[in-house]
Length: 117
Image 1: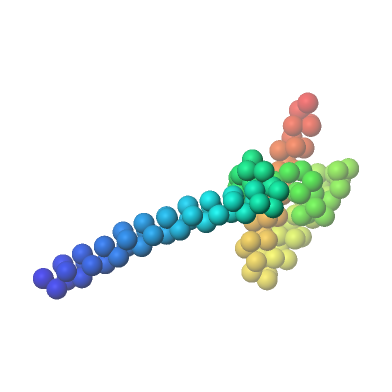
Image 2: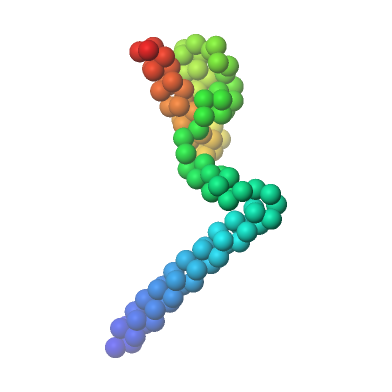
């Protein structure tokens, strides 16, 4: 009986907590848009900035992350990627490894499309 009561209390806490967090997230988003409009940033730009965080990186960003230029060969890009990825594997920075991986993937798609076209 006590276990059932504890389970009900725990489930109520989880549901209530989730609802509160959802309301807080919506309020924070609205406040961010209001702050953006006060500072001169349009709502469209603010929403683009929010969406940009989840988008694929640009070619320039990928080149900057790997330390290559537009004229770099694919072999040079792979050498840089492998070196940087392995160095960060030793230091344990999964975030940087992921950035290097995404940069390589971005440039790989571009180089493949250039080779086909």
